Image (cartoon, rainbow over all chains, first blue to last red; front, side):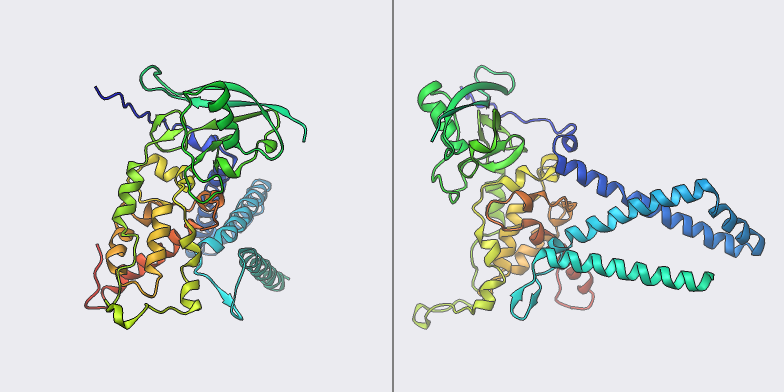
Length: 132
Length: 248
């Protein structure tokens, strides 16, 4: 008689059992905030198409405390999402060489984050100039 | 060196008498230079000879002693008891069926390994008299990292996608597949790309990245998987441009 009885362990709750997986679920979850903000902008486009009054009302609605609070949460979540996006970038890119030497993963992540910071500052400066 | 005692909680599963795996505690005397594997060997030699586990080289090259140490996939020979003051929990590698105690069933991986044709299929067969297949250091560099794989399967134990659906080719097999595809002497890349682009190929991966984190040989299987996502997607779209392109 065959005494083999291989035991298969269940996968229920797998992501709660390791801090690495919890972080993974959190950073994947922040993608929903990116989608939410895209929706906010899309509503803006629709309101713009509806005429000046609708557009002005939308701008006023954006200034409400609730909207400012929601934007703060969105900013934090999207900021974290970009950080993790660049953190995983070295794993998704083909090997990069500079002067015959392999560029380390940390340098790729750092370059990405610096580029985000610079682009954000440039955008902020541009928006500042337009609004003042 | 002072001798201390550590409590080792070891997963037991004896199919002829246990319904499900359970943890058995052993108090093991240890010194600072003792690995988890040495702790298990102490148990087998001195406390309970019925404990089953795989091991061979004791120096992180045979890839036999992969197991979960405090829930993290590790090579038992490369993990030290001194890093787990008080208690350490040792379990069979996650995501594989348990044969007995710490021994898992490897059949699924073996079948996958065979499928990726993990050997050089020469681009052009060359007679012995023509000498070696030559390769430059730059050509070697393209795959060297992926050739460090020792088939220890820690990456499979780190991959929730494999745990949820074992039809996924998985990080280790894809890293090895990539190793041969990147080799300038090899000419079977097109055959292997069919596996990459298939339903159970690279697109099962959701870039958790834990496989590369736990790899004891710094192979970075997540990189191999993600590079092949780009390549498979490229093949898919370029088949319209290339009359001979083939993709399934």
